[in-house]
Structure formats: structure tokens, C-alpha cells
Amino acid sequence: MIDAGPVYLAVAGALLLVALGLGIRVLRGIVREGRDRRRRRRAGEVEKYTEDEEYGRGPPATSDDREAAGPDGYPTDRGDPGATCPQCGAANESEFNYCRRCAAPLRPGA
Image: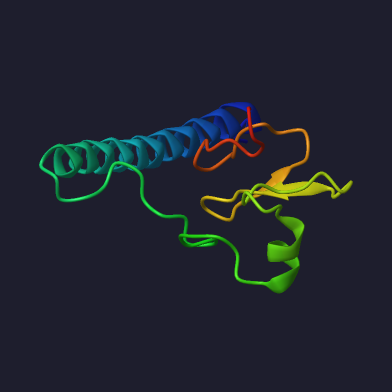
């Protein structure tokens, strides 16, 4: 009769080799894409930082967000759970001093 131990090791080893091969393929694709982006960025074909698809570019369009901002465009500290960036419109946590997406100051003097 066939011992199950060596069969199990052979199957597990084969599966690990397949997973390793697929992982290497994916990593090579990521590296190629990064090199291609760097080349295109250096050639001026794409901007250094691309826009966030979720937020787009510019301040938020809702009236609630405009009311939350002070006269200088910075969010007021009304105890809101978060702060909206006056430059890009990204939602940030209230303890942040700078925008998590564009690094603009969220408060004057920050």
C-alpha cells in the first residue's frame, strides 16, 4: 500500500511551486508597470500625482461641506468627526493637521 506522508509532501510541494511561480509573475508585472510609469512620468506624459477617482479635483460641492468651512476656506472646528481638505475635498480625521491625500494644511498655521 502507498504511504500517505510522501504523497502529501509531493502534492503540497507541487502546489507551493505553482503558487511561487504565479507570485513571481505578478511581482514581475508590478515591477514592469512601475518602471513604465516612471519612464512616462520622466518623459512628461503623465503627472507626478494623479487625481483620486473617488474625490476628483477641487472642493466638495455639497452645501453642508461649504457651510462647514470658514471664510478662509479651512474647515471650522465645530466638533465634526472629520475635516474636509479645502484644496482637494478629501475627508480627513479631525486630529489630522495635513490632508491625507494632497498634504495641504487643513487649518491655518498648520
